[in-house]
Image (cartoon, rainbow, N blue to C red; front, side):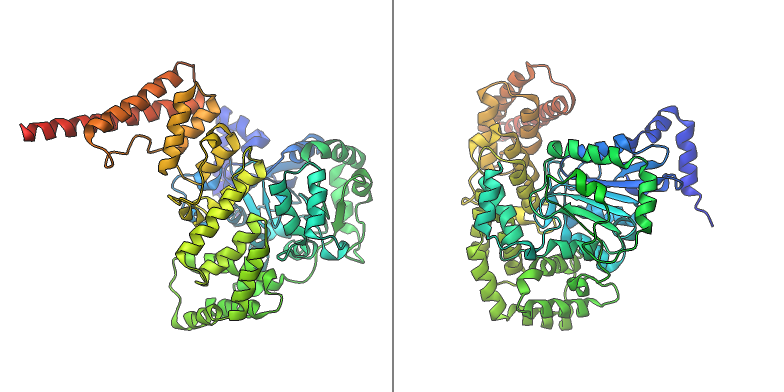
Length: 554
């Protein structure tokens, strides 16, 4: 029986001119994936895009693919899900948007993902997507429309199809290659360790298993070109293909004889100057599927996690084990049964694993790799609270270097957003070992990081914010980020008497009046007005409190 709900929505859209215009716009297909997928034209091919960093690739596909044959749907929401209000999935973290996309039943014919890659896709759009998350959905078989249905999957990111067998470079050697290519040292170290370090995995094989059923998987086995660099190469490819619908139908009919078969020679030629790699998917399941297989009970999954931790190559599975505990226990606030707790206790008592994890963490340099091991140590209670706080401060300080890169900002947000899956941001609140530099408020990436880390309540941030507000008239974006981060600006009442508090608020109001002298628009104007209104409200409360206090004393 055909569903009537999507049909009703479509009729309503067509009745309203403004809505019709939005429906006809490709940009409309990004706010609610479940709703928009119901509105897709099944006679057309669907290109699903996951734009985590550069949108150059998506725009080129939109430019060259005939709208009569193709429709586009962006799977990431308009804003970072961790910032959305009243979102029941907030505490699940950065990848919640992908879980929702999987539930939408959208069926992709082409998948295009763009982002920096080092075990997870990150970028400047405020989202991330961990390869482990894609694998867990592949294991659960609940995201076939995105991970299995496409004929082609384009993975635009460094090392997305890298395999350890390709060469014998060391972390340091690859680090030097990246630095010479223009990467800053912090980012280069993270990517180098993701490729060749102790936690490095065969991305090629993982992608082949994560995207089971996809005929053609395209990625890079080393450094990927930036969005601007790949533009002319990708444009040349799309021009050479011509009718892309015919191309997909032709690709679907090709008989695969080996995993390394060059199924798309046109793409191979067009991107020859790059480290392009292509392969077909695997029929095998990811090794860690026992953690997420829906046919397993949680006890069986926990026993599987214990088995992975006992393996000699246990480091390969640390990320998956941590994700398992966070999703199956922490997210659902589920107390282990007696049988499950017994298994967890055996894992905690695994001295060999405990020592190897500690030794490996001490040797790593990349923050994202270090925090993966730190999270397991935290879940297994192998560290004291003081040790955990000290370790997190060290990680955050290593990333918090000015000027801050986009990758460092996104890594900080991925780790320390308080709404994230691990809640690691709480380890930095009022942590004296973590340094909040006043100069950070003049760096937009650093400001974005402090905002997503939700450190606006930290007294050190408020002091730095007042210094910035009082120094000069700020640019719109800088002013907005400061005000949006310091949501409790001026609330420090308990730490001072009412007279001092009134004077303190008046000082801030004077600063905001100075900032308002410059015409403001949009979100900056709203933030300025709402902050001023809130300060006037709490000032009024302090005045009333003072009057009441004086009345009693009189």
